[in-house]
Amino acid sequence: MDGVAHMATGSPLGHVSVWDLDKHQLHSQMTGAHEASVTSLHYLPEEPLLLTSSPDNSLRMWIFDESDGSGRLLKQQCGHSAPPCKVRFRTATDILTSGLDSCLRSFSTLGDNLNKSLGQASYSRRKAKKLGVARELGKMPPILDFAVEVTREKEWDSIAACHRNLGTVTTWTCNRMGQHKLLHDRFRGRPHVLALCVSVSYCGNFVTIGYSCGEVDRFNIQSGLHRQTYGSPAHQGAVRGTASDSLNQALVTGAGDGWLKFWLFREGDPLGALQLSSAVSKMEMHRESGLLAVATDDLSVLVVDVELQRVVRTFATSRVTDMALSPDARWLLTASMDSLIHTWDLPSGCLVDSFQVASPCTSMHLSPSGEYLATCHADDLGVYLWSNRTLYSKVTLDPLSAQDHVIKTDVTKKDGAQEQKEEEMVILSLLPQSRWQNILNVDVIKRRNKPKEKQRPKAAPFFIPTVAGLEPKFASSENPESKMVSYSGLDLSAFGKLLSSRDYGVVLEKLRHMGTSSIDVEIRSLGLDVTLNFMDAVREGLQTRRDFELLESYIALLLKVHADAIALEPLLSDGLRHLCTVHHAVWDPLQCLFEQSLCIANYLRSAIL
Image 1 (cartoon, rainbow, N blue to C red):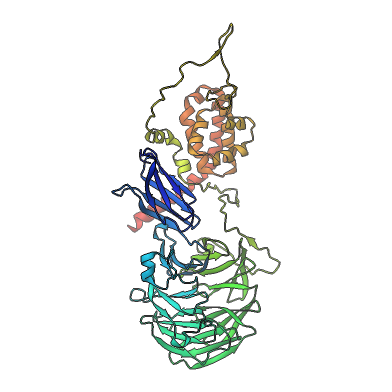
Image 2 (cartoon, rainbow, N blue to C red):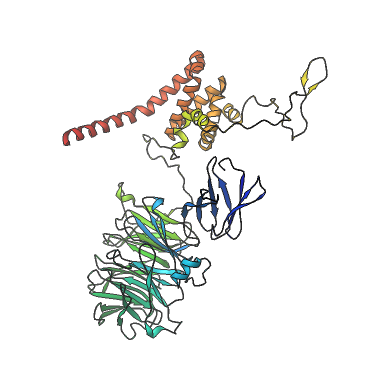
């Protein structure tokens, strides 16, 4: 580390200790570096920086620039330390998630640097700030449901959350935990009364809470005061969902008794009721259209018109874990316990898309722009983002039948290889740009990053042992631990032997997984016959029209290193001529398209400006 002989060690308690190897003593210690055990540590070369990782789903960088030489936190990338259970878009680019770690986090679709933690739910903010939530015994249970409204988020709290096995509802700002804990006086001393669902009005002033005893209360989120109680009680079973319209005229509540009830939002008087075939399990409201999606325990999903108070669509599915309505209220997305995510077209009432994920989706939500779908899954720490293909490509959504094949998607793996759909397409490798942009400058990078020369040991051997005889020969070491290098089997490297086998598909796959420095070394060490085989491998790769930018970089490095040798050898010149023919066949159509696009862009720029 920056020329200093230090060693860092991590403990199962999350502490990091730094030891001075010269003085044989402890240099400094960072207590509570992670919430779980420290599993990996790495010093950056020639920098006073230390990277640490932990099973708490965090990666942290520490810099040692304090006056006493100790380290401080420089930057970090963190997620939920326990699986997230609820995900909602706060804006078109910000995603709010709550996890089983009692933490509320915000993730940005624009960049990881905008991610932040709103904090961990605590009974006492003062104690949590003083002692830390990890050591404070007043940590609240996990957040199972929350609602957010951004209309008045700059004036007061804009998020309301209900917790597992708790009747109190907490409020949050967009940056931290709020001041209010909402609970009516009649529920104090009644631990069996639990808050199961919550919703925030469109104006951002009121919070509606549904309880396990069938009661429904409305609070003012700014002052935390109780404003209204609906019914006495509102339902005979546990309230599973509440939703209000965009004008604060009507409130809809659904419960385990199978009733869907409509109330005047301000006065609290009943407007009507709708008897369903089974108990309500989930509710999702689209305020602009007045449509309400209701999932019931009989494995069906109903779409209710709040204005007409009647069911307009019915869909049969499996056990629903969450639902989402598109911004234009044309699609209804449902996630079920069989790991399937369905897309229903509401005007036609047909299933238009369905795909399967690796583990059941526990929560999902569509962005206000309809561009992304955010999902979280059972026993998974990640929050996954899906792109809406209809926004950037032509997609025909034909009705699917029960016999149609369901697309299976593994959310834990990403494969860069794409299926080639048309013969005219040229497909890139999707590898990082550094894997092919820096191939021509490896020698410059090595010279710039060359470490300082180490001092030679004083007891270095000068003479190499020989064998007595008429002809002097070097003695071959039979000791496997000997540092003497044997040159008997170094005629061809493993890559060179692979090229000699003429299995070019395996050769290209090997190059794809090799590093930039390794590729540079292998190409520089090519012999005459192996160079010709390398040209044949690149030519075969160009004919497949895959990994185009990687093959271009290989050709550029080959010509940079072996241009003189290729010009002197007729056999290599003929091989290069065949390679150029295939290259022109692939590149010329692309060049025509590029030139056409540039001409159109230049014409539009000159005509408009």
